[in-house]
Length: 329
Image 1 (spheres, rainbow, N blue to C red):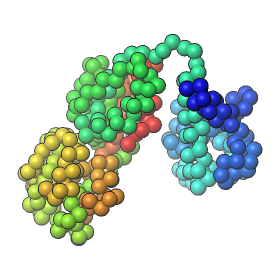
Image 2 (cartoon, rainbow, N blue to C red):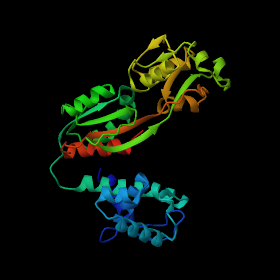
Image 3 (spheres, rainbow, N blue to C red):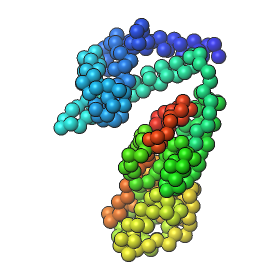
Image 4 (cartoon, one colour):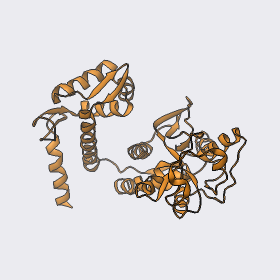
């Protein structure tokens, strides 16, 4: 244990100098000995994530001019442009993309060191997370081991629910955080901590006759055997609504709230399914499933991490939110 702590401390010292500054030690692509201010690096991460100098400033409590100065200072220190600023859009350059990867590692290392060395009372408490059923297993698998290792006295209570029920729980203070998989939600009553657009596709087994890639009409698609998630559940609801607009309907041969189970059954050529890409990606990559070409049907869903605007964000709640943000699908 002492040896591990020494390794971590030595690693930190590679990056950290006096007065909250980081000294880079021959990181690929930049001059050896370039010096970066930690505050500038944190600002850079926020601008990269939010794609906006103004939003990053709001998040950090800085003016836009301060954010611009910090980014310019960082670019001058490294000698490379980090962002392209065209028509009010902010995108990372190739140098910026590479720095972001390193910045995440540096920031994580510093946070880990600070968390493990600060002599404060242990954080403890209960955090209630209402989450879409098809997200829960994937998200919890990603965040819980590290969360429990660092904060063993935080209890994470997961409540699987549909979107409407999640917000009822949030509004009744029966849930602290919601993690949705649905239409994009715009409501000033809620604070969006993070959000991401998720791809959704019709899929079939690689051996299915429809895997050839030809365009499929909706009238032909609905004749196929389908394995679907529960009626009224996010993308299933959107599918039913769009089909109804064409006076069509799917009568599934199998219904389950477990999207992973559906994907495994489709792999065995039990039928077709409509599933989010984070579920089907491993199957697509190994060639077990194929996306279907359905030009008449486009479904857009989002994952959003929210809490009520009036909710006091406790330390355990903040920690859980931070872990969820880092692992956002």
